[in-house]
Structure formats: structure tokens, C-alpha cells
Amino acid sequence: MTEAVFETLAVVGPGLIGSSVLRRVREFPGLARRTIAVDIDPAVCARVQELGIADEVTTDAAEAAAQADCVLLCVPAGAMGHVAASVLPAMKPGAILSEVGSVKVSVIEAITPYLRPDIAYVPVHPMAGTEFSGPDAGFATLFEDRWCLLTPLEDTPHEAIEATLTFWERCGSRLREMTPAHHDRVCAIVSHLPHLLAFTICGTADDLADETRSEVLDFAASGFRDFTRIAASDPIMWRDIFLLNRKALLEMLARFTEDAQAMARAIRWADEEYIVDRIERGRKIRKSLIQNRQA
View 1 (tube, rainbow, N blue to C red):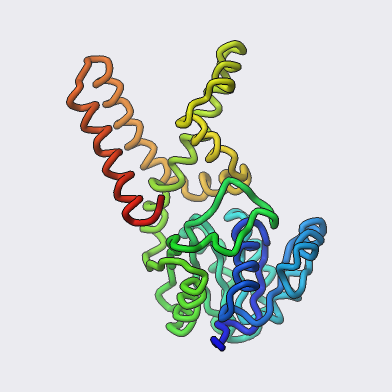
View 2 (view 1 turned 90 degrees about the horizontal axis):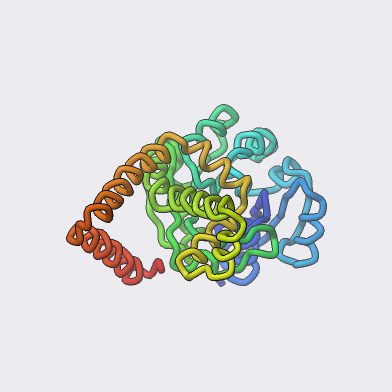
């Protein structure tokens, strides 16, 4: 039998990511022998209990942290510092603190003041998800063949990094290490900017005159439907991501705006060569995603 990476794993925030981790532990050996789910909302705790995806469920994060070999924070990025402050004093020496925030520089800065020298902190970002949220949204295979980015700090113990790598590898993830700043720039273009555009396009459609708006909703083609799927994502989570990664996001938005204006000029002046080149580049990116098993 495969030896478990952690004896006890505490998952704080059993939403889409957190409940998927809990389900993965339930269905696949070698991750953790025991799990504790934590949420401040008693209704969420009750639902986790009904689903039977954790060995213990509690609203007391400190109590759970005191028992855990690894505490995994799966809360919105804006709440990471506050939650870390509540669990770190209770954690036992030698335990690992990790979090799945979609932004790294700001989250690390928020958590760092509360770190202890006897607790290893390993930030990660599993790049997997859907537009749904809550404990019912998770599934055990969410992380299969999806990237999990690790952004360990310079003084992070090697053993803690290895344990975290093994955990996510057994979750089915493909692994990559990078610096927090590089992570935020990469995610700004591949994740955060597309979400910003989706929210904005849906807002534009919603602001149209009533008759036109009705037709937009009635005759929405696949392109618009794809945007609405993205735009259905959790608003609090994305508010935090936009604000906490504002520097990298605004940089990518400025570059996109320049490219969009260039495309507008090409359309205005019937520059067929430029238009075809842009479309072909999009097709190549789509093909590479399929070949890389990310589509």
C-alpha cells in the first residue's frame, strides 16, 4: 500500500478546489490518511458532512490546524492573510502551510508577517477549475493532466517542497516551479485577462437597448456562450484576483488594447493580410493547446 504524503490534511475552504482535493483523497490512496474540512459557514460544513468527503468537519480553523501535518488554504485570495493569521499560531512544529491562490506575490506578502520558522510555507496554484463553486462543484479528477504551479520561497525546506510536489503529482497534476512574480505575469495573460474580457463583454451585452439585448440572449452563438461560461465564475474570487494582481493585469490589458486597436485599423482599412495573420496565429495556439492536452 502506498504511504500517505500526510497523516492529517486540513482543507480550509471546501469550495470547488478544496472539495475536489477532499474527493481526491477519498478516492485515491497515498495522499492523506485523514482529512479535516474547515469553513466559517455552518451551512457549508453541513453540506460537506452530507457529502461525506471529509473525516471531520468544523468551523474552527485553529482547532483543525493543530491536528494537521498540512494545512491547505482554499479561500479567496483576499482572505488568505487573515486565515493564515488564524491557523499559523495553532499549527504544530514541522507542519506545512500551503495555499492555492491564483495570485502569488500579494498573497505571499499577506501571509509572510505571520509565518513561523518551524512551519514550511509552500504556495501552489492548481490551474484547474470550472465556473461553478461550493462543495457540490468539486470532483476527484479535476486536477488530472492540469498544471499545478509551485512558487516556493528561497528558504523553503526541500523536504516540504518534495512532499507538496508528490501530493499534487498524485492528484494527477503536471508540475512546474517558478518565481511568484513570473507566475503572476503568466496568469495575467492566460487566465486573468480572459476573465476580465469575458465579464466586460457580458456587461456590454447587458447594457444594450432592450430589443437588441433580447436578441443577443436569444441568438447567442458559441463564441458568446463561451464568454458567458467564463463570466459565470465566482465574483468575490475574481474581484480579489483583479485587485491583487492589478500591476501585471493592467500591463497585459494595455498590450491587448494596443493589439485590439491594431485589428480595428486593419478592419477599417481592409488589411486582409494582417487579419488573416492574426486568425492563423489564434489557430496555431489552439492547435498547440490540444497537442499539450490543455483543451
